[in-house]
Length: 424
Image (cartoon, rainbow, N blue to C red):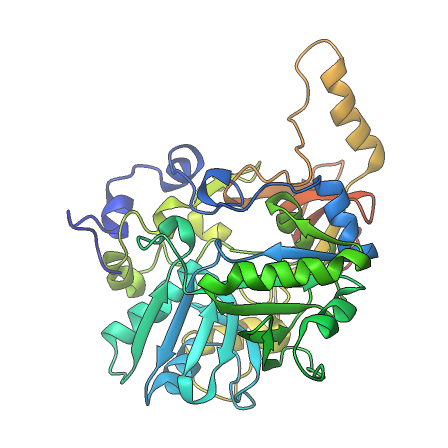
């Protein structure tokens, strides 16, 4: 990482931009393939996104996660200590064969990002997803007194090698377990949730994480990138009789609506003198300089986009059994978290009015795309108000679930006892 060859840092971008929020609304290109299909080789649809959505509820689905998530490998005598200093989680019970949802915050307790942390035992640690969090880890490792080595494998669109170190597939749905049992060599192991196992599929050594995007006994399978097609063929062949479908990017990015997960919050790093050295280290072309805002929420202060782990429903994983960046701030926030994560269910009659306006004279309502209607590149924010104008909270992602037959939004309520909405 580090600043660009021309010396332009994220801090330079901020200093020369009169209105940073306006820039992120109108001028930034966007960094993630969810809003930019040109950034990923994964097809948008294999059959159609509606069938692909139903497959993770009714049969099984196979998603290709090989291209949109960056990875970072951390090794060395101080690897665990470094991650303990960065993560709000406790790593006391993390050992070989386990994984965790790993969360990093600023000194003020604002989320930078979250990812999946694999403990590879003697091989160190593997962190998957969240470019801002991986940037933060890399910065801490380079500027602190840590005896560690790092290996970065960026997402395909930011990867100068044109390839990845590993393929990564998600097999999910009610029939996923039966398919998995057929393809593994030897007796199928019993893997606990968020635990891992090493095994072979079609002669390929793979790592399997017990993990689900839909509440079933799903698995995430990773292995050498060049062997990905071999493993994919084995899964598809075994899954044919079980109704397995391949899921495209449209269906994949709509999968989180049913669980209320809020991906990629805007990292809370754009303000504060204590973070100036970090902003001077980040290039202007980093993800942090390419995020793309959208929605009706247009505050004057970018700090109003910042969130804490409690806003995202991660309060249960914050553990004060170790020293970490942001601990003092989060100890104060934990006493009275200002927001509660919810799922907002859109009103059917309102939706019919929106789509009906396309068939009427005059200017129609803003188009609500399906299955995902986020118009910012991961950073869509809309205000939610009562009919009399009272502010209730913010919604982030918005899209359609064919399984629920509803349009859903992830929502942060400003009250612990909101007056409406369904709890996620």
